[in-house]
Image 1 (cartoon, rainbow, N blue to C red):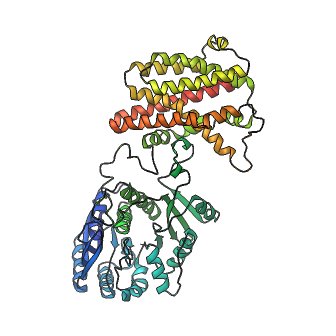
Image 2: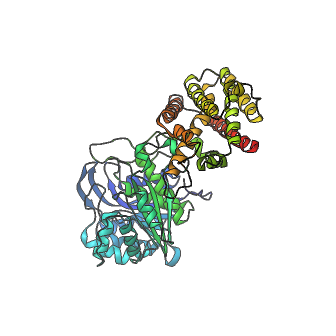
Image 3: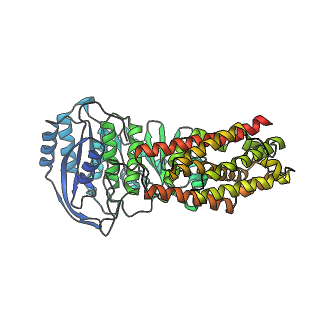
Length: 538
């Protein structure tokens, strides 16, 4: 989550309205603060009669009683961060300012995160219009960070005489810079209302002062984990502006009704991370990721916009649930846990030379002979029948290539086993004899999935303008086509489905998951050893 704190308890104060349905306001704040391991205190600025369908009524707290609550809390409990939500009207805002200035002076203010609640996620007005100017002129200069959404940013800019319709990511960057002039140390313009794309992100990255932070997206060398909806996913982004720095936090768009209290949750998470010692950029990064997962894991409650799942991180699942943006979570964990070896395997020099069509015939034939020798290992581990069937089919494909290059099946069968084959075969047999079929599947999938990833990587590279991959006249083009083609990729998807189902039906303990990851890592390296041996032989 966020940075570890000192040994003393970290306290976060929320100054906001009460949500009777529990999904937003101080109820969401206190859940979020607790989920981050902090102690939450609260000052209630208004009572609301609301549910997931909307707000039916608001009863403001008298400003003098708001002030009294603040002084009561701060006078007794050391507070390491403050967040504000709905402040209702100008008198309430001024009461908050007066109380904070009474308790703190000069640079002694703790970090203050101001969620300028003007419009709820469901579209309801939550701030008296007369209060907006007071918020801008008197409260923003005290704030470490303000966190408006699209509608709030447009309202604030219009109020300040700089109207701007925010339609896309570029508009968000302009708006965030403009809002920074209103006095806060930093601005986080939330983009959950604007769907963007990787193309838009790449265009903005041309500006040297813009950094991009991705979360929740499949990374490089994970083509086999992509589905149609994840190859060019819908994205949302939050724009962070501080000084001359712009940071864009990008994540997959989640089509969900469970978004009630999203802004409250995000600002409370930022405050909690600051209280625990994170710097502002890291606090925003961790809070954005936390809130994204809170939406992704939320379960339907009520008939309207349901609440988030605030305690998703308290007892985290070792393997996340599958989702549209992460359809194969176990395999993703396996690859991410060994990303450097996986990349060296997929983007090996052998593969690059093959893609260019310049791989020596000797290296290719040596590789084929190694694979033919490998097939003998599978006879001792027949329990993983379907995956082995697909791998044997893969080996038969390699044998057909050898025939085209003038190498007979007898010659293949009589080829002495090399060190790479001996190591691989011995390891597979050892895993198979242990009787744990899931571990065996881990061992086999590094082979099945690896060639599938290589095929898709070469296909993706070949589609680029001025690609280094050669297709016309490449003697290995059929090899590339076969491993990126529907037949082999269907086997890859079957293997992915099998291993993900195993993990769902029989969730592993931490120790068992660690064993699976060790097997995957070992077999990835052993598979890479075939490329190495072929290159050495040439």
